[in-house]
Each structure stands twice: as C-alpha cells, then as structure tokens.
Length: 392
Image (cartoon, rainbow, N blue to C red; front, side):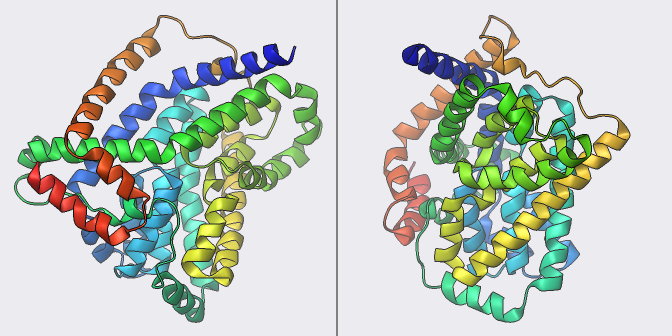
C-alpha cells in the first residue's frame, strides 16, 4: 500500500508536469530573448526614483524578465546597488515573479482563464498596494540601512546569475536578434533560468502530487471553511500566503500546489494570494536578511504579506461580483493521464527546441558559466559573460 501510494503521487506529479511542459519552455525562451536584448544597466537607469513613471517601468521590465524568485531577488539587489530606488527594485522583483508570461500560461493550462486574468489584474493591484505602502511607511533610515547591508556583498542564491549581463545592445534590433551571438546568449539565458528553477518546479510538483493523492478532500474542506462561504472568502487570502511561506516552494513551482488547494476548497482569492506569496518563503526571507538586514527583512515580510492578502481578497471579491469565478473545482491535470493530443505534440516540439538550445549551450562554454552562476565569485561571473560571447 505504501509503494502504491508513492507511485500514485509520482504519477500525479508527472501528469501535471506533462500538462505544463511546453508553456514553461515557451515562457523561458521568451524571457531569454528579452534578457539578451535589454541591458540591466539600462534598466537600472530608468528606475532611479519611486515616481509613478519609474514604478511603471519597473513593472513592465519586471514582467519581461525571468520568473525565478531567487534570481529576481538577486537582480533586484543588483539594480538597487546600480542606482535604482529601493521601491522600484522591489516592484521589479515582484513583477518578475507574478506577471511573467510562463506563469500566465501555466495558470491557463492548469486552472483556466479566470485565474490567468485574476493573476495579472491582481498582480497589478498588488504592486499598486505595495507602492502605496512603501510611500506611507518606508522611512529614509530604513533605506539607508538596506543600502549599507546590500553593499557588504553577503551572498544569496543565484548571485552570479544577477551579476551576468549578457545583453547585446549594438546594432539594429533584427540583426541583433538573429545573430550568432544572440543564439548563444539566448541558449545561456534559457538554460541558466531553467536550472535556477528546476528544483522549485520539481519540489512543487512532488508536493502537489502527494497532497492530491494522500490528503482527503474532507480535510481541505474543513481547513478552508468551505461550509461558511463568507468566512472562507476572508480566510482564503489570509491563509494562502502563510501556506506558501511554509511550503518552501517559489516561482512557477507553486502553481501545481495552487491547483491542489483550489481542488481542495480554498477560495478564489486565496489561490491568487497563495501564488503571489512566492517571495516571502522562508529561504527568501533569509536572503533578505543577508542582503538588507533583519529590520528590513521583517519590514518586507510585513508589507508584502499585507499587499498579497489584500490584493487576493479584493480581486476575489471583484471576480465573484462579476460572476466569473469558476464553479467547477476539478483540475483536469489531477485527474487525467497524458494522451496523444495537442499538448503531447507541443511538448515534443519544445523538447526538440530545448535540445537545440542545450547543444548550443554546451558548445559555447555554458557549463563553465553555470558553475559561476551560483559560485563563489560574483565578479568573476560578471567578467566572464562578455568574454564568452565575444569569443564565440
């Protein structure tokens, strides 16, 4: 019985992976293209204040960036040190994990278009709330403390990834996009993004598969107060971020978990708040402590939780008022095995594209750069990036 339970959990995890494989690949490819064509130094220059214009640019540029939570946190600190304002760097960070293309595609595939719409509308709302909270509560002394700690260079995950700026900025757009250098840079950005999130995606799928098979529906229904409609609408956005915080799963890896929670009875707003909360999991809070100090880490936890819970609650109520909250809670990926359909065809195509990018990655010093990405020398990683691309 134990072996059968494990097999069932692994089968459920694989079913979800098969459903989201091509959207993940497509999203990471588009993100790699953007990173290849847009310089982070140019991004930092546009985020030098906390004005609405600067925060708007931070949102747009973050949405076009990588979805890896650890990389987003490291890049935000890099932008902060290069001259971006602290609120703009944080907004960039939140947009780069909550408004990215691959997250939207996975939500669409696993949960449907209402969740896709709520994620993006709620993500913008959450950033607006966060910007207001920064304006009302962020003191100059706290920013100075963050600046002093950030300059010490204490390390977190994905530090080398944040230091590498492989953007190609010389020449016309199309010539840059279709050049051999761009092909190399896209392959490097793609595989560095994939390797930065595969543990989170894998962990999220395994936990989701286990919870879907092992935890009875009666537990979820009692825990999420499904018998009390009004209370459940409030409880869901409050408890969703807490579950995310304790799950240790971030980035797009928490979407399969969100599907299990929705299947179990959490409110619509609770699902959205849970997905938003990938940037307050315990490992990332510890990185905040290293980067900016304990007081700033606790401040970021407080304002982030408030923005996530409030945005989840408001977007859930709005979608319910509009009558577009799905009534049917069954998640297809939790109930059906892979079959020969458009998903399988697209997965086959994108596996070939991934193999092509992997071939280019290995042929152009990718493994060496991968070791530097999370290695001991950030500066050496940053210095190595232009060298590799110029050479190849």
